Image 1 (cartoon, helix red, strand yellow):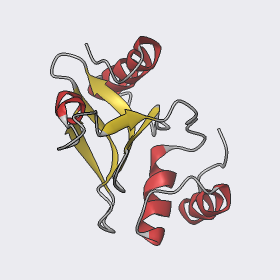
Image 2 (cartoon, one colour; image 1 turned 30 degrees about the horizontal axis):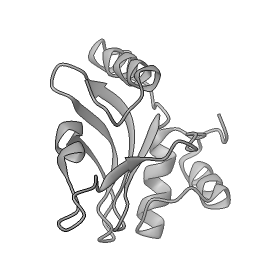
Image 3 (cartoon, rainbow, N blue to C red; image 1 turned 30 degrees about the vertical axis):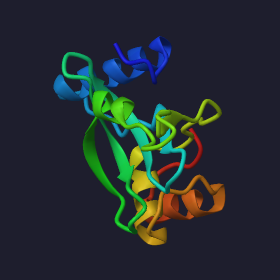
Length: 134
């Protein structure tokens, strides 16, 4: 059980992962946004393998190369500030994924970083010929 992601959001992410595993794959919107407190890393996550605590989504380590990938939630929870010994990664409780993951990926590739800017996301949706806000 992860401490970082609330149970209701975990359940949505697990359901999304089950859909993908059952070949009912959809272009799910991100369910949670995690970010580093003292850096530029951002993770927009849409699926969760509860058995291994591995999530899937758009991962941006702040180096200008965001990509779809897998990340261990257990590992993210274990990262602590070297001096302060406080967690380095936290959830953004205000995040609400309004576009499919493909749109966030397209906008991130164009801007070399994850963005929540609605205008940039709408441009990406048009390029992909995907409907806008969910």
